[in-house]
Length: 314
Ligand code: R5P
Image 1 (cartoon, helix red, strand yellow):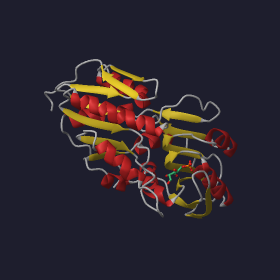
Image 2 (tube, protein in one colour; image 1 turned 135 degrees about the horizontal axis):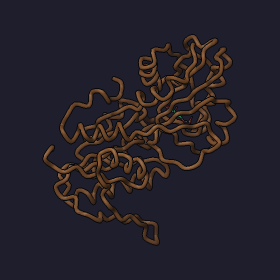
Image 3 (cartoon, protein in one colour; image 1 turned 45 degrees about the horizontal axis):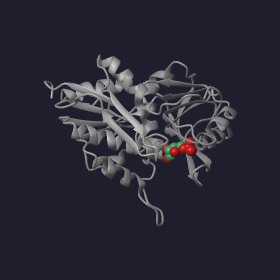
Image 4 (cartoon, helix red, strand yellow; image 1 turned 90 degrees about the vertical axis):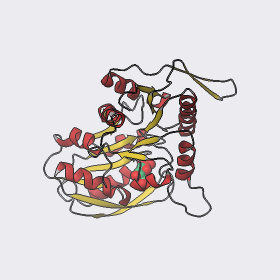
């Protein structure tokens, strides 16, 4: 593919990230016209040729999830029909990833989303901290699963007092917490959480030594904030001390998050720009850009080089 031209197209959910990636690669993003018909239907049209290119389409399926998902599918279809030679989808945040198992007569949302994405004509997809490593098995196209853990660990490293402890706020975050603990040379602990519904969770116990330590609570995503709220309360009850730092790859900040999180006395929240947002000025949040990771990944994939340094922890 090295002789083929790289082209980068960013959807509306990842416009800023796409533009930062283009700057790093010294490219201009593919121009595209995207608008809605009066009935709400989306219309997309590439405004320049992509024929014969090694095309990277960047689009998170962040809220509004379904709108961004259909935009991803239609952009992919447009790229394919316009003659892109190879099409790689870079999905910085994969919505529906949490619907990865069935309880009762529900739909397996992650599988449904994976199927429609795979059918849109991608040769390969790149995901970043997509909730669980098992998500790869949902897709019928090859997946490169990257992690933002080194980026975020580096961002918090110098501000963590000694002694600190990396905390997984639930069992699902243990693998990611292990990676942070390895990168930061810190011990780790796990909060035992039970989800009651979409907005409410309950946490009762901590496994690991947190007394007298400052927690770095890590997670793949921060959605309504209830997981972090429950974890922080449980950690404080177990003797953890301030400052409390939070590092998450995907800061969705939906529902009550922006009211709830300021009440928790967090010193700092560090998140990636996988989900683009405006506002949240009332939160002590700093954003670390995935652009260097994504740009390096594009360079490696274009040259068919190994991505072993950037993969999700095994
Ligand atoms: C759940 O398993 C995820 O890893 C997150 O812990 C969760 O989705 C965060 O959601 P919320 O902020 O709404 O508790």
